[in-house]
Length: 399
Image 1 (tube, helix red, strand yellow):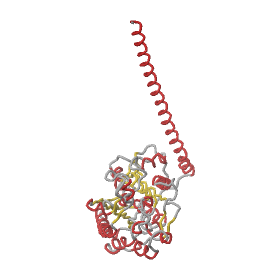
Image 2 (cartoon, rainbow, N blue to C red; image 1 turned 60 degrees about the vertical axis):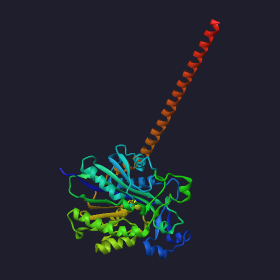
Image 3 (cartoon, one colour; image 1 turned 180 degrees about the vertical axis):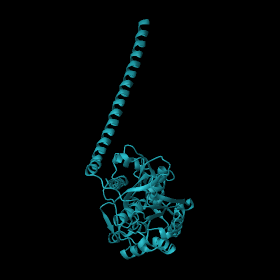
């Protein structure tokens, strides 16, 4: 029997703080008219508290998606977090989200494909479901790129924002859901958009910090030329792979990087009607892996996507990478009874308590085992001392 993977839940979260173009005018040599004409961005949300991280944004979006799907976290078999600004190099941000949700039955891993990452992760989730390795998979795109941006560089600081979006894919025997995906890369252009330092090639040092190598570096013109080409090509390819035509597509949700890229690739090259392209770039900026799921969530909430509609999600990113997926939207979800909603909400305090208990237990056993080891070392030291004393006493007796 064929297994299909339908999107049954979706959600988003962005930080409260908003940085407008007028705010940036006071930081760098730029102005609102220049930013809007070059990018289409009016404002972006950024984190402004130490407690706000990629994992916390991802967790908020994940909870919204679970609420929409009417599922408890224990229903998840896998959590995939696509991010270019992970909590750490390791452990995976997905593991931190898994613990925060209390998704006790879920595996978790991060996926790095830059701004294409969400669509890559969507394809991986579909593969897990289609191959019968999972029934329910959470896919999250989450970023805190504001912490990787050089706020004195007007070419990059005007572009990026923070946020998270999530979807839940679930197995079904009903046709639909993810129908096709296209994934591509061209590593010869890896240097065009990168975060040079912090990995094994350039570990953190006084020199890398002094040189600003821990900030995003981008050749904007080269990335623009690449993006306008692959966005159109990937869209055509994924539609053909699904056995459809562009006329069948109800809505295209592109990566929200730059309005001129969207206009050049989707509108002009594909000759696709603007009213059937979802754009929210002006309010959020480029949120990298989070941009497509955030836009998708807003499109659904605005009624732009209905059951049976064909939706294309397409993006590009550092690597260089590109990805597209075509999804047939499923039927509306049944309303949950009040007690199920209450239980799902009550689960999160229990998850925090469970996590705190497991941490405390680890600390206790570490202390207890450490105490035993120290006691054993002390006994060994006393035995050696006693043995030397006995040997010394025996020698004196012989004299």
